[in-house]
Picture 1: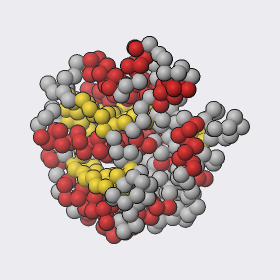
Picture 2: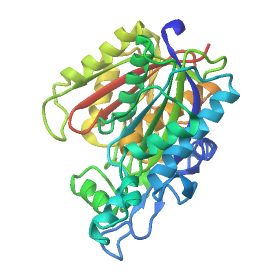
Picture 3: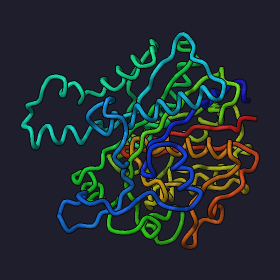
Length: 386
């Protein structure tokens, strides 16, 4: 089983908890949501908005915006971490960057306050290719480099693409980064208007995946990076396989028949070469919205054995949009390494298989699902390192 998998050999995280994977892990273990009241994020001056926004930081040399700084900081941390765990880069190191909305702060300023008139150097900083190019130059990597975009499923999409590159022999290693720092007043407001985001309540009051009283999610930001390789002596976990599909049904709603959602789970297990009976955890998309939680609960009850437990960390990390599934893969991989599933505390009656707070890791596989807006279904299968 593990021989077919790709090792997650290094992890880097920038999140609402701060710059680095350890602040995120400590926050999760403490059951503390990353979200806080963020001044200036509301459309009105007196509006209270809760969000898990990445704090200011990073190296100004990496670019003028938070997006590029976070992307390169997360990637550097992952590369250092992988090196400490026995990885050495091969000749062909590729880069995949999951992006839905890039440099929104700079684009907003470009249009609203600067009238589209900026020096050429600053204009180049707006391009999604620029932080990728600077990253490849910094480390002297010469493999393929490209962006991946599949809404909230972008993290899973990037991991599946990375594994396909490695399986095909196109690269020796992949650095994968998923970055979403898109919280502006306009973006937050429109997600609230869509009826899925909650901005006026503390996270555990609003976002209760698989529990009664959940009203949606609190929005978050993150950049998460992995080094993916078969040449590490001490990986955190293995990605065994995965699958993606599209509902082709609606711009925001899941097809209520769940035909393609269910098939994606089944295809991911088949691609990984494992039975549903081997799955111990469903690390769910779990945004706290009625349609997503009902869909994943139905698949859990239909496909997986009674000892398969479910959790979602979105009440703590926030919904990090294009980086969401990458954040949640990092949580699962760190959990295998450290012997704990850092699930949020339950706050209301819910699904009987929902984990309640940090729990010891039991033997078995983790299925990570992510249901991106617009019908993007994605599932990957993760295994512990031994």
